[in-house]
Length: 312
Image (cartoon, rainbow, N blue to C red):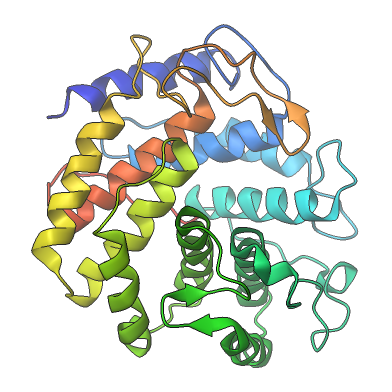
């Protein structure tokens, strides 16, 4: 069962030796994201191999803006800066570095009128949930418990029986949105027993279908379904489904040891930057998503693979 782990670690060693390229055949662009994602893999497999964290941390910190605290890698997009900065801070946390604060007023000047807490934004809960998750991450890091309480109260406007949204989207977008919200709730150590009824309904719907293809869809599906095991709902059925997905994920691994985002292609773009030519090979983006999914399956199914779950 662990052959895929050995192959993945060999891939990561080769990526490390190439200065954190996106694939083994090159692509050195978007270094902030590449090193941040690599840091998650280093955390996942820390019991199998000790990767050198110092160059990862040094590279990530090089992109930190000294005045505002956010991490900027050749982008002026608000959402990209927010997302990349959250990813960078998560990487530093996984690497054992004390987290610096960010100047939240730059993007969240009025906590009573947040740009993402609008009905039309919640028509796409994947995006809205991501923005909520980032906000909760920064509030937790900046020690703002009163604002955490405030935004969670606002979130109730979009709470439905099977997730959070304004107008109901297709199922995979609904699930992706739930996953984003859960990542934020995990950061603030939320008590999921308060959401038992909703999680039950979400689980009932998910067990009737399979995840859509692709790294994000698979990872999001696993993240959400694993919560049912956490709260003890339909555990046996959830574990059976998750183990089937475990087998599916391994079909995304390539001879080079890495995983691709799609079965026949790597991710081409990230945060507006070209990161690969999209060919069928292992990539650090697909490898990170698939290995994180495998780590949650390992925990939920009690596979005892000795994998660590990174903060995301």
